[in-house]
Amino acid sequence: MAKNLHTLDWTLIQTFIAVAEEGSLSAAARRLGITQPSVGRQVKNIENNLDVTLFRRVHRGLDLTETGADLLGPARQMQAAAAKFQLAAEGHSETLSGTVRITASTVVSHYTLPPILAKIRQLEPEIQLELVPSDTSENLLFREADIAIRMYRPTQLDVITKHVCDLKSGLYASKDYINRRGKPETVEEMLTHDFIGFDRSEMIIKEMQNMGIDVDREFFPLRTDSQVLYWELVRAGCGIGAAQRVIGDNDPMVERLFPIELPSLPVWLTAPEVLRGNPRIRRIFDLLAVEFEGLTKNPVKR
Image (cartoon, rainbow, N blue to C red; front, side):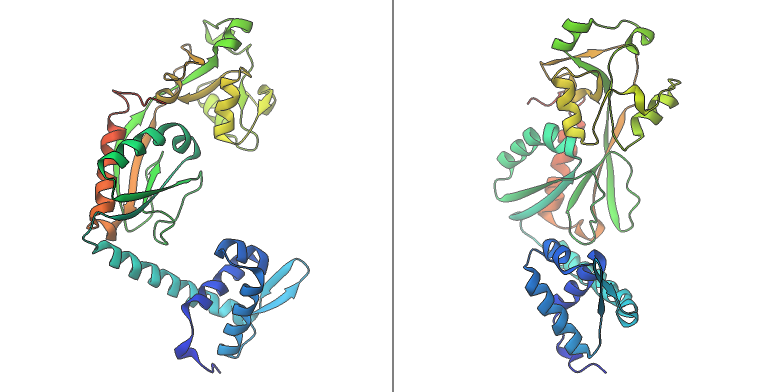
């Protein structure tokens, strides 16, 4: 039976969830931003409070006991409820000062957002901005971000979304590469050149196959799954690669190649629905929408 359930610290529940999901004290410590001994003490504390054993040691870390597994679901429900409580409170904020956390893909974060955020900072100097470059889907409910910039329509519940523009893409090669290898004028000629591809991801292969160009992994002599590194490899003259035109057309080191028309990328802004009434988040959301809507007319300057 629980000894002191009514005084159980919410921090301990968060630690329990982190250890359960990460499978070790060290991984949970990195996730929580605290030391491994602190995580161990907090796990022991919650076990003493509840008078249960939550984890058992295994070769590579910790596994949930049967009791721990039974408690993980309710703990996650508490986590979701706490997140909704915090979001609801944030939604009633009446000031423009404070912090807004934005997440976007690594490519958008590195090449498109910096000048946009510089402009927004000039317009709203009292609002602090945090930028999280990530190619994974951050969970807006748990405040991993206030606003997400996506290249697809979000499907998460309880969020507001806005389609702000469609960014055209193109194929590019560095001017140095073109000077060495020549500029291809047809699709057939282009396919004799070096292409930069992804490593584990099959996205480029599938896109080319959808366009009727049958290639496999071996078609790409240089491969990486880092999209920022991918573009730097193009700029360095390693081969031909794809990029958003607002990036490639503004880069003096590369030149766009015309034989293949690539599909456009939709840009969606997303924020938790309960933050609709938060002035600073609403303001940054609206400013981002204006800036992205203007990208196709006035490409960003880097």
